[in-house]
Structure formats: structure tokens, C-alpha cells
Image 1 (cartoon, rainbow, N blue to C red):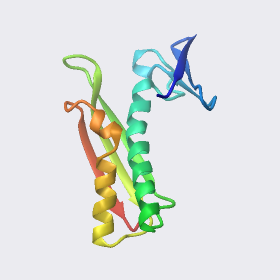
Image 2 (cartoon, rainbow, N blue to C red):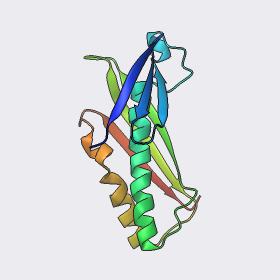
Image 3 (cartoon, helix red, strand yellow):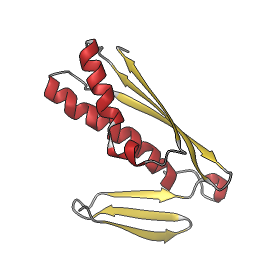
Image 4 (cartoon, rainbow, N blue to C red):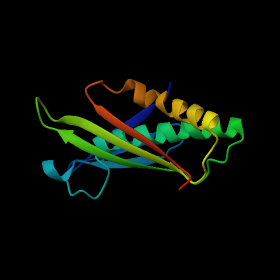
Length: 136
């Protein structure tokens, strides 16, 4: 089990600490609810967690397959919904890899991404648009 701690700093900001490593991430409420927009919001972290998880699993598998996945990137967009309550409505993730693997490797890497724990943990009401772009 991983242990983390979140401290409220005031002014709609938090400091999140990964206790095993001491690494910290700060969050702030989004602009539309009073934040300054100068940091990740908690929902931004969820969106980037999805992309980070997907690309990490692809990297693990690529390493096992001997495919050079270095330099791969993921662009993430988050759309909020307001009805029936404020929540994440849609996540768009575009994963780009500089190299283009053969069809079998590509299918395995894409399947690995779609089996990431964050993807599998998201509520089905959150629309997810996932694109893989190879050889760019």
C-alpha cells in the first residue's frame, strides 16, 4: 500500500506528499471556482494520471519487446461537465511515438495502454477518447 499525505495550504491550494520518496506536488482550485490557474487542479491531476499510467505501461511493455519507445508523448485535454453536478465529463488522450512498430507490436502496446489501472478505474460516465499516433 502506498501512503501519501495532503495538506491544505490555504488560498485554495494543497501540497501532496508521497511519503516514501518525499516528492511533492501542489494543486490549486481551477480558475472557474476562484483559483489562479497557475497550478494543476485536482481534476487536472486525474487527467494527467490517466495519460501517465498509459504511457508508463506502454514503456514497460516496449522495453520487454525490445521496441524503442523513448521520446513518446501524451497530450491530454479535460472537459468538465456541469450537469447533474460538476465533474469530469470527457478526457482526450493522444499518445504519440516517434517510431512506428510493426502491426503486432502496435496492437500489444495499445492494448497495454488500455489496460492501465487508471483507465479501468474511471467511471463509465467519463467519456474517454484515446488516440495513438505512430511514426511522428
